Image (cartoon, rainbow over all chains, first blue to last red; front, side, top):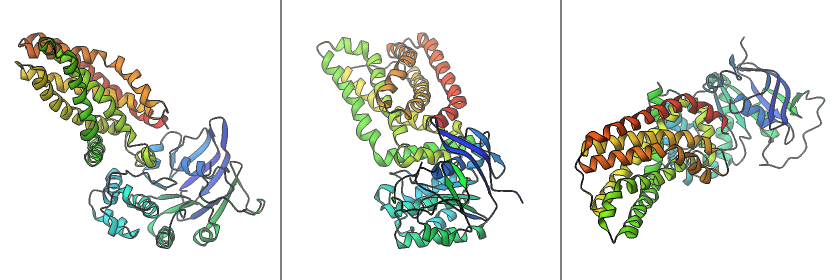
Amino acid sequence: MSLVVRLRSLVCLLGRFPALAGVDLDVAPGEIVLVTGPNGAGKTTLVRVLAGLLAPHSGEAEVRGHDLFTDRRAARRRTALVGHETYCYDDLTATENVRFFARAAGVRDDGPVRDALERVALGPAADVVHRGLSAGQRRRLALAVALVRDPELLLLDEPHAGLDATGRAVLDDAVRAAPGEGRTVVMVSHELQIARTLATREVRVDGGQVVPIEAAPAPGPTAAGESGR
Amino acid sequence: MIWQEAALVASKDLRIEARARVAIGQILPFGLIVILLFAFALDPDRGVLARVAPGLFWVAVLLSMLLAVGRAFAIETHHAARDGLRLAGLDGASIFLGKAAAIALQLLLLEVVLGIGVIVLYGVDVHGWPIVLITALAATIGMAATGTLYGVLAAGLRVRETLLPLLMLPVLAPVMLGATRAFEDGLGGVPGDAWPWVAMLTLFAALYTAIGVLAFGALWEEGT
């Protein structure tokens, strides 16, 4: 069985600071991996490396067999990220934003675009420009953009932040359905109560390394909305 | 594939501009004001205006282009849209060609309006339309390619608004010179003298388009 994510002694420097200081991690197909840890532990850096947005410095890193040192573009084509930002354009409508990223992923017709918007309950707001959407609707749009690309690896960085009940239900449904749709999920979250009900495995990151859950101190209260490193 | 992706990026940028109306509402009026200010400054002698019209026209285009290039990369800064383009897995060459095409189309529209302004305000007679049009096309492609290349260089910097003109204007001096001389010959009815300048502009455009296709991807990745 080929791994979706394979990291060995992965180091990623932000300036001179080792945000990731030797991460070892395997993620198998269909897993929903919850990444926890205190602020500044390196969770967001880990997700951004997996998304191909940050170049690692040493070690080994592969997503679906594509080397993140030499072939990040190919890895990106199999990956989608719902992060702290929406990655969308203010002056495009919800439909136009989703359609743009769908076309970039090689989706030629509008059926999947409409389906993605309906799935995140944005059908009624399909023709509203991004700047006219509420914060929660924008988060759902970001999820639609990610889903329309039909990624093998779905990366979620604090996905519950800013979502109302509808948004949380939409997101949770998408995560639960992921294995059945051939997707693997790596999710960073501080909302442990919800996230643990979705995850099939939990990984704790601290000090830029994956640490055993047992050895790690219990997660303390963290400032919601405070970005990780 | 590369052309499809380039067309996707270009249509996205043009759609955003059509909706935001920055090009029509701000950049175009800025160019017209520059043309108008020259007219006010040199008004006592319309003969001077007509003689220097080609240079004034291209100065106005060049200054407006700085705004267009800044705008083309500013739309990628909100909501980390630049990361979104990277996540989309588009080829760097496609993004370069798409952005350059969108800038070139906006500049061509701008040049049409500024050209009418120059003819009306400066009392210019155009004798050689073909050479004027070919010159405008070659110079515009060169400026758009250069602008896109230097735009991405400056895009990740906090001082991009001031750095971009400093980087670009010296590089675009040959385009200014060539386009002005070719326009002078085209307007003056001696288009034969303009061809060497057109050849130089075409070479410049081809060179910077090639550099952009090859280098933009790495700059796009490194600039964040």
